[in-house]
Image 1: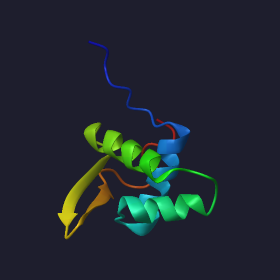
Image 2: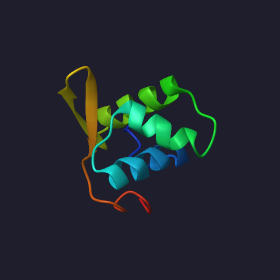
Image 3: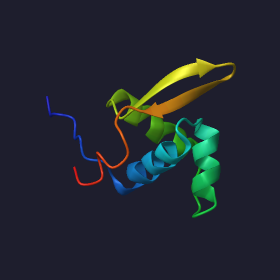
Image 4: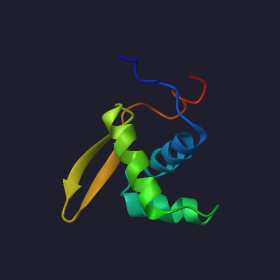
Length: 81
């Protein structure tokens, strides 16, 4: 089995920067922040954040009807990884 890549893609890094800036964020929060910069689909953000959670970059907790995500590592720790 191939090991999971720990390095973040450009898109994942964009998402991490939003989560780091906000402290915690829903998929909608991240989507709205990224949509202001470029065209991106809500489902793309959702799928990418789920993948990042599975790889340990984000953690989530249920909050009413949405999951709230937080970074598992401090700002900048994955930028040069």
